[in-house]
Image 1: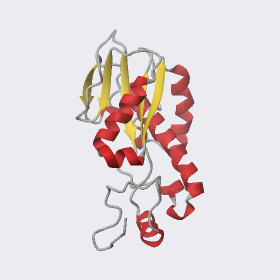
Image 2: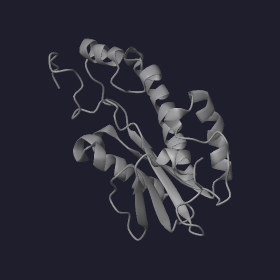
Image 3: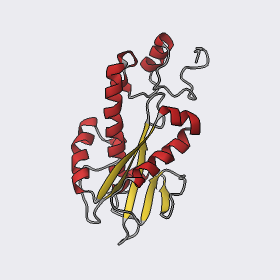
Length: 199
């Protein structure tokens, strides 16, 4: 069973990102502050849930949360500052937009760039331990999936509606066949070493 908070009586925001391992598209992050008594039997790490269940939970999270926000970092920014820093920046941008200021941040993972004036705790696999991080993972994942569906309409040959920009075989074959788009991350290994690609 997931925990409501790390420390009772403290206003905590859970933070998580989506799209870190993709070859294309922005990285998204969400920050969520849940009421201390929030419970939902289906809320879990977004990777453990079906797509349908994630979209059922999203409006529930948005309605019940004390505050929530989504931050985005573009492929151009990812190429400039690297994906790890981009993930942290996306979280910072989500936290920036919260209408309620949290007293502490619960970060999914083992590292984080400190956010000004708010202490944090990094928690490995936090999305399977704390409700607020699980909620953030669902928002980050569903908003990023919506974005990739929109991009798939513009560039159907890459099958982004299915692979969401991740390095599937179909995605790599499409890169080999059609080249890259402005949405591809040029600093990533877009093709295996045996296949060359002119950037």
